[in-house]
Length: 314
Image (cartoon, rainbow, N blue to C red; front, side):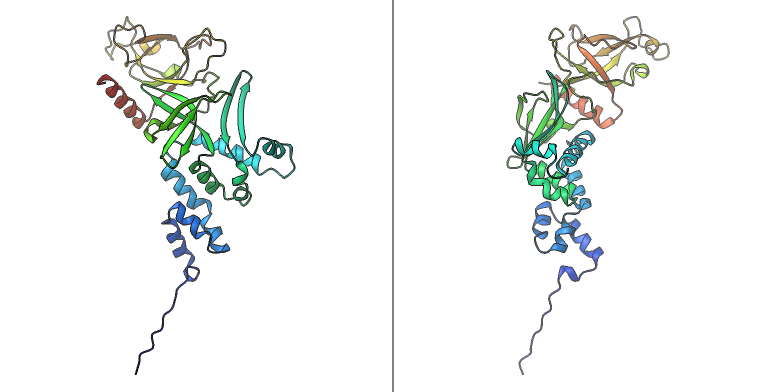
């Protein structure tokens, strides 16, 4: 007698919700997108923010920071405005592109820029914010604020991703958006640690506590004669000792002095660029130097030391 074989198929929808959630967390972004096409229920599950937030942190956490996310929230607010509003009409006039700005002409600084924002509107209106953010970055449509490593300094820029080459393009944050980099690899970028616009001086909160040996980043501009020169560069430096100090930590009074010595170790000892002297209580808006950011993260300090060592052996 011939044996009759029976088979039963188990649908994902028959699984306990907790089991399904574990499976979805293991899927890649493209697999989540494909799974979302199966049915309405899975579409909602696969587009949930917590799944895409994990993918955002895993891929974009190194270059997409808190202030870039605030720019994204600004775009979300504008795009999800009610139909027929003035802002929505402006988006249509601009062929579906939208940018945020600060400052005033000619010191107009672009905060971010989203191309073809209408492509993400349905996701945003359905409250799938993180999926829309991930796709806007992956597609290269979202130009977001980041910083480019250039030797021993970083440069403020807007960057856009190319998924085909796995590299980035970069533009200045000024209104003309001049290209400042192509085919940039991930290790050449970092997220912007401060919200300060490139066209203004960063307000420092660490001047009084700085002492010899502290690692810092300081805003710098090359041309003080130009009326609208930007503070778009942040240079790595170390707080040094006064000329009158014997550098003995038991007798050093440099921290109590009004004069602050900033030392750029990428320059030779005898170079005129090696040291700069600033006044703690006065930030001269007409000078080359802007605000100071004290480095507390050992990871950041190690990165700069590696770049410094690399420059010495070039």
